Structure formats: structure tokens, C-alpha cells
Length: 205
Image (cartoon, rainbow, N blue to C red; front, side, top):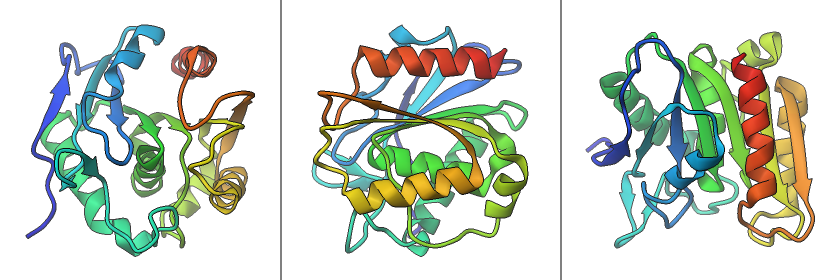
């Protein structure tokens, strides 16, 4: 049976004209984890889906032998599940602003890589990248979308190798704004969200 997203929360009001935020939570969390971040951000509609793999009351976007180094092929079914859900609930003409934390940051890059024309902005919070190339990476190299990548300098969850792989990919395929924060671990704080809010305001002008 194909994976499917079965639960989400939203403040959906006016999707016809404005971009909509799509929250992608981290490993072991759920759809309620990130929407409170909207208090820092421009007034926008948002959706927050629950990842499809149930870990027993907590959720994951994919299964892989090494969670920090999943292959592109490990993520194909899961990425399709998100896009199928987006196609059902969000109008085709509505652009997405992706905000992903940790494993959700990885899935944000997967969505950007697979349908870059649909994305108005990408926010990667303490995220990482899959191993392998995707055919549509060429579109990113041609257009170099501006993304923001934020991580704490005290983050012990994401390996140095995973961070380096993401940074290399971002430099090759995007115009990345990379921000690091002293004293911050695998988390998000006011400094992060102020930088994200600035990125979104500039990106959406």
C-alpha cells in the first residue's frame, strides 16, 4: 500500500492569491509541532501535515537504514505522498513556502528538488540532504532559488558530514542564505525566526 498523509491542521482562508506555508515537522514529532512559529512570521495561510509513518504516537517522513543519510530512492514514495496531498488540498496556482525542521528540512529540499516551479520560498531549520542526484536538480542550477538554512552551532543531532553535504548542495544549486547561531542546539529560537521572517518578507515582496 502506498504511503499517504491522513491528518493535518490548517488555518486555510484565502489560498487563491497568496503563497501558503507548508510546515514539515521533524522525526518523532507531529503536525502540531511547528505552527506556533507563525507568531514570528508575516500573516500567511498555513498547512501542517502529519508525516505518514507511525512510530507509535510519533511520526516520521521516511524509513532508512541511516536516518541522516537516506538515499534519494528511500524518499521517492514519501515525497510522492506529500505531493499527492498538496495536489488534493492546495490549488495548483498557489505557491508553497516550505518550512522544515530537521527531518522535515530534508523533506523541504526534496519538494524543492522535485517541483521547483511550485515553490516560492524554502526554509531549512537544522536540516540535511539525501544522498544522490535528482533529474530536476538541473532546473535549480539554472534558476538558483534563494533559500535560507539555519542551524545551531551546538547541534549534536546532525553530523558534520550531513551538514557538509547540505552546504555543498546548496552552494551548487541555490542562492543560499546560511545562518549559524552560537549556543543553540538542535532547536529554533527567536534569532532564527527573526532571520526567517526577514527572508520571507524580502522573498515575497
